[in-house]
Image (spheres, one colour):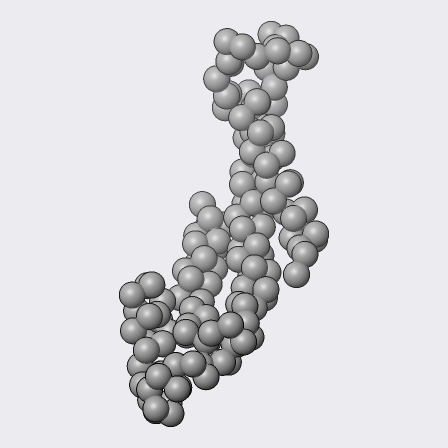
Length: 145
């Protein structure tokens, strides 16, 4: 549970630090808004603040390009990979405990293959958790920015 608490802390920090791109226009500037507001930069800043508030963000990035920074993707995937690490550890712990006959996953009616053999009783749910966790963790290494 402590690992999941650490993941929750990371997620809360990430969400709290994320910003909106704002009303920057197609070139990453507010030139069209400055024109609409007769060059009043303060009105542009207030517009950004109102948009961010409506979208549930604390604020907007003060400087941006045409699109948001792909660094955001990297930060989000890093937190997801951390959650996957915790899930993977949990599934391994369940497998070890099942091997020692301290816990047991339910046996499924449609269980097939070698895991369906009565003497094996492979923990199917733990195997699924570990497989999905491995996929998410490997995505961190293959991030395309």
